[in-house]
Length: 114
Ligand code: 5GP
Ligand code: ZN
Image 1 (cartoon, protein in one colour):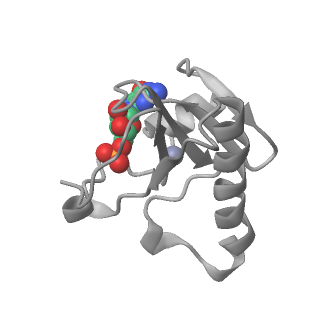
Image 2 (spheres, rainbow, N blue to C red):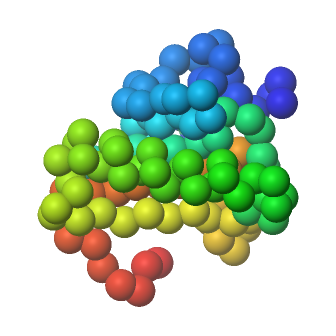
């Protein structure tokens, strides 16, 4: 996706503060952090929304959470706790249409979310 900002971070066309990557996923710090630790985990291949996940993406979806767990430990929030959020479309608050798992920690989260 040539006009997708997260695809450009994957390709290196725009910089990202990368905290983890493997063959399938990339994790980088959010530009506008909503918690002291806030990073995004994305698939390296372009998928616009949760609605576009296909059955063959099941392993990839799992890898997003496995990467979240690895980076949470790296960032020392694994024991204190963290929140994982994936927004979908307008009512979900999705602004970048390349699926991404928000991982936020190092502060107390509240419920319900806004
Ligand atoms: P959404 O609102 O789609 O769930 O989340 C998009 C997130 O991407 C936001 O938290 C926003 O701060 C972050 N973001 C948008 N553009 C960039 C960028 O160019 N670089 C980084 N690192 N984060 C971005
Ligand atoms: Zn993309």
